[in-house]
Length: 73
Image (cartoon, one colour):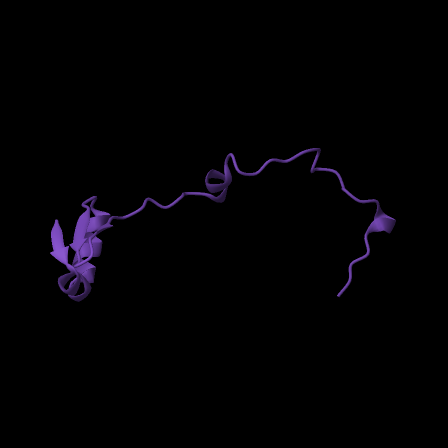
């Protein structure tokens, strides 16, 4: 669907609903064209972090001895 900026701002809720249904809205301006589409949210933190976080070593055991832990405020 193609629209202009003024109509897009006035009827934003309508265009947002269309984007949720899978449509892409093209908003035309004097300088160019913008695309408005819905992005699928990530379902879990693990899925969002997959491939970006690496763990080295065993995290089930303490990493510091008891006397090395000195919290400060």
